[in-house]
Image 1 (cartoon, rainbow, N blue to C red):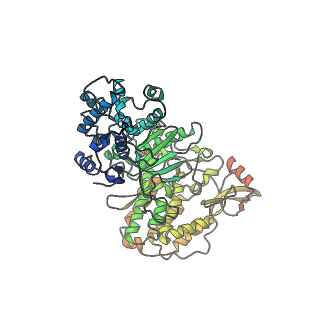
Image 2: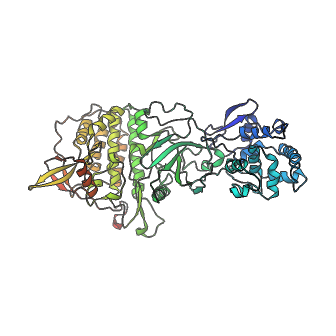
Image 3: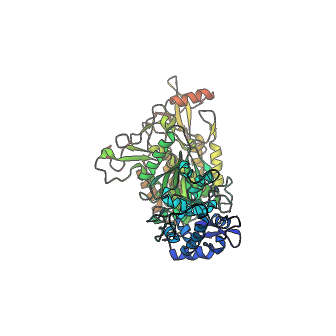
Amino acid sequence: MNQNIGIIVGDYLAGEVIKLKVGSSESFDDAELEQDLHGKLNPLSDKDLVVGLNGSFDALATFFWKNLNEHPEDKDFFTLRLLHKLLPAEKVEQCLAMLLIEAKKAYRPRWENVSDYLQLIYPQDEPSSLSTSTGTKSCIRLFALLGLMGTPQDVFKFIDQDICDDKLPMERDSIKQFYTNPKLQNFYEWQRRVNVPCFEYNKHQIFEEQAILPFIKGSRNQYDDQYDNADRQKTQNHLTERGGYGEVSYVEIHEECHNFHDNPISLRTPTGPFALKRLIRLGGRMTEIEFKKEAGMLEKFNGSVHHNIVSVASTYKHGKDYFLLFPWADWDLAKYCASKDPIPTMDPPKVRWLAKQCFNLVEAIHQVHDPPDPDRLQPTDKLYGRHGDIKAENILIFESKDGEPEFILADFGLGALHHDHSKSEVPNHKIQTTPGLKPPESIMEGAVITRSFDVWSLGCLFLDLLTWLLGGWQQVQVFQRSRMSPYIDGQESDIYFDMVTTETEKTVKTGCIVKKKVTEWFGGLHSHKHCTQFVHDFLDMIEEQMLIVETTERKRSRTKALLERLKTFNDGCKNEAYCVNAVPRPALSERGTPIIAEAQLSLQASIALRKSGRKLTSLHGHTEKAEQAREQDENHPQNS
């Protein structure tokens, strides 16, 4: 069997906890499950039906407690199918006969025959692998709940009051007719243990706050601060990373409680494990608004749109919190380069792989920027997207069927959708950004955030990737440290641009440049002893088409133009010499003064600068007026 999902169960005979793996990426095999369950679980037997001297049913309660699926937060639970496997009909009948005798000591049941109750507790039709109920009326969950409580004889009272599984969970007032505290409280809390919901693919669900979700214990911690050993085992299930807008945890889901395995094409790991993203509460309705925005982006752009875009498995609201479920990736691009492959080999397979992955990534972003939408009749209804947070941490690494690492675009938390008449032009003060990779227009007066925002961020990412290819992860860190300088708020930042002042006709104006350390780094890579023609061409594209402070004279390229260049790189890589033959350019002592884009700081940026007390560096050189390119449909420019 495929060993992806673990059900933790009690081995009653051995008196210890064992782990039984029952995962499968294929269709659910009843015979196989039957063999596993009856081979390692212990269905209800005579020893569990022993009545204590004081009329207690401790043995039966122990049986139920030992066979619960272990939950990471001690909210152990039963699935419906597991109950059917644990409770053979003949033993349930024997148990009911014994319980009926005990119940009659204090209560007169409606029916005299055990068989009348048996057909309700153990219906003939078993649930499917995803069912939360059987087709007919059932009390099997209720029976298990009362067994956990040590009061299984009360099942007759509930059935006689027409209370079966479909009435769970019950409110406190309804339980009061049967119990007082502490049993009332136990029933109220424990009823969720036998009534767990199931996740459904590509569907938004709402769960009550008390609901126990079908997570099971995992044992891996991929997110170590030192990136030192991604495969080591740790007995921890919810492994959490907190970002600026969400918290991501590693989770495993009981296989009987989701139908993701029916969608192996869209979901790369349909049997799990999964990444669970909880949106951090922002106050008021902001969390709901942010959730709907990200969920809308993921609904529009996913693996069915492009192979290199992550698909969301499910979304849900649990109590007041919003969650998104994704396939789990062992690596993001930053951790992959830092830990999995910190010193890459400069050989043809590696270079061809990198060229291919960069092409696929830009192609995926192009689908977001200009999605094909043949079903929409009116051009004004067409939706355009912007990712808004492209960085190495948001590029996941999954293995293809051939075992090749693939770049998968993820985390649309800062993304947005816009109609044709507005494209993605949004005032910059309304945009949240990841600081290090944000473009210059994010702090310019009157500027808007467009799809070229992603192009700048992508250029920063590609420059880091080429640094890694030539010098390994250590050089990426050296480059990051070299860029550190005071930002407008006075804090040290590794951002790729800088604001300066320049004097023109006795007037001091503010302007923006690509950081000098960045332009110098381009020169250093071109002169690197291992630099190839592929790397030269790639660096030229980044410097000349991507890391551009847009002016009246110079504009950033859009993704369509970048794809054309990247295709030539991929074609060139068929020639081994283009990939790996070192042809370094002579080192330049000075790369010249960068072009200064004249622009006023936005109000927010001006306030931050004034509060910090920082003085902008004065720079003399060629100036051009900052001006953003007008957005247009790259695929259909006539509609612009």
